[in-house]
Length: 375
Image (cartoon, rainbow, N blue to C red):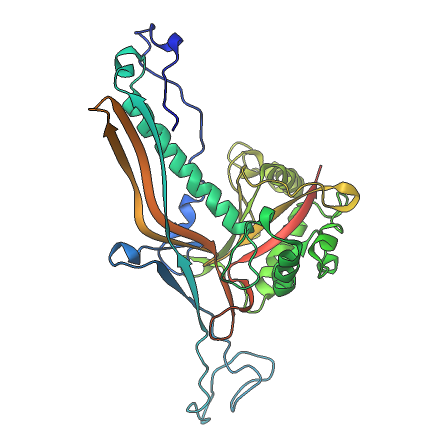
């Protein structure tokens, strides 16, 4: 057990009541968490109202219509039954799939001796509360990042990308052939994941506006397609999450593409192309997540490669049985005071597959993954 000991040089400066703690970013995924089926990170808190270990997330695919089939269909078009043609017997089966997330308990805590409250120049109780809250935000953020990059060969067992075997990565790559993009061309794909990464170079396969649009086309052409987020019942958006290196790369490219528009009157101060905020391009919100890391020197000529996660609805499942709460432990007749945080939840990238268990050839439900090179 590690016990917090107040450093000697903080005990004598009584006037210093404020303290500085390490800056930790707030959870940059928070605005994309919601309880409805159109949210990127779908929240389900059913286990707060009942006991259980697993939460079921229902996935409902869009209707295809009677395309090229059934009486009254229009060739090569999606249409309903028309005119005097019979609807009965031509109904479409609703595409409902199931995805399960198990919850588990997570705890963390710090402790100090009550005597140190007399010596300390800072409020130890408040310091613990604040730093534990920041730890909780970091913990949620990091687990979402791990989930976005996770590999699953069966839709049930999820492994962090860094821990996945070569075989599991290849199986995932084959299953998601219509949901992955390597650089600037679909032709860069190879069934062997490492070989496909080796086709990504720093000349053509960087994160540009054109390549981002291609990644969006991949998401739209996937079958079933990755559903965009609908805003105001008609506007459709995707959200792309990536690390700093690729974000800056895209920012520079978009600045060049939009230079004429900006010089035509749009303020540089208010234009996101020139700021560190989110970018917006072709119906895609691009959000910088500095903690998304490079995959290493795995590209052509040992180029560094980083993923981009283009997300639509129901990309991540977030099951909550107990929200984050503060806990405490006082012992040794009140001398030792511990404070901690506890939650019971589960986070996983949503997969859907075939078969009774939805586990055959599972694919990412709401994520198209792009791989781009940088220097």
